[in-house]
Length: 206
Image 1 (cartoon, one colour):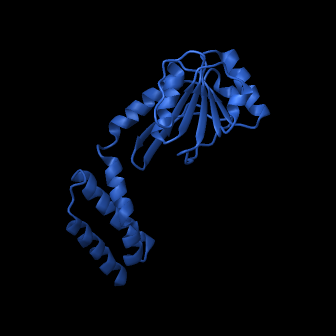
Image 2 (cartoon, rainbow, N blue to C red):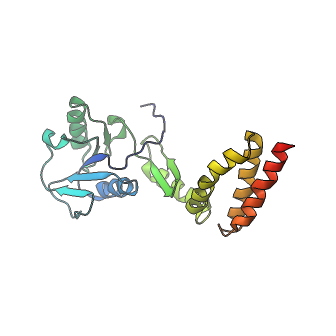
Image 3 (spheres, rainbow, N blue to C red):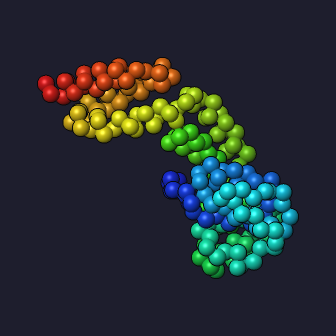
């Protein structure tokens, strides 16, 4: 598979996880961070139901695909995952296979999520362990509270677009404001930000 990474909104999308063991729980944790609605089908599992999560204790069959947007085959058996994937292909439902990623239609990367920030790391299924390790290394480098900083920057976009007409000056203003927010851990006063915007607004008028 020659996978291309792109971000897609999965909030309220319906995922079916086939399997209830350790791998299934890890996949479940990732999906729940992004607001997916998940159904777990497994003959035996200690996963408990909660809001947005349904657990059905049974052996998987094709009828379980009804209403599913995506399927995760994570049974702990490569052969069983492959059989689930084949049923999904027959019914036109995209599937991820934990046992042998190459048998599926998409990968689930190791992810970092902090507010609007999303970082995804994938080894194309060759080594999930390394993807997780690299994710941890990257996460250690991300400033604390970056999600709130990015949300604050996002709230300024409309004002900067309106007051600073040139892309070059807007970019410079963004960079300066970001530098202040990172240095002050998002404690920068709004008056300072207004002064920065006013400075670049004046420059753009000259």
